[in-house]
Length: 120
Image (cartoon, rainbow, N blue to C red; front, side, top):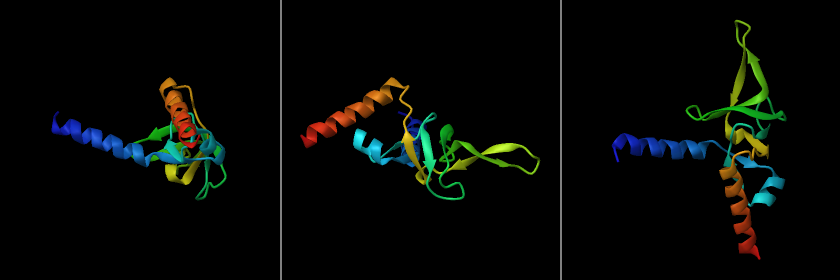
């Protein structure tokens, strides 16, 4: 493997960790996980900052910035253009997961099954 490929893989792993958000208590009980990576389509609730209490779908994920854009969080620029506010994933809580992706759904259900096997 080339050095650039190795570094690229390490960057991806770091970004994967930084884009994680806590799950709501219902989802924690259901899947046996505390946090999961935020994806486009997940419904989140903002827990900190000026937009505290706002709930909306994730419309975009910015891995390079380590931020997400949430539907309904917009601000006006000086020229009048509206742009999405970029929020750090640690400041939000996932309320509803987007399970359209088969792999994500299988991974979550597999982890929930493992949790049940360990307990019982």
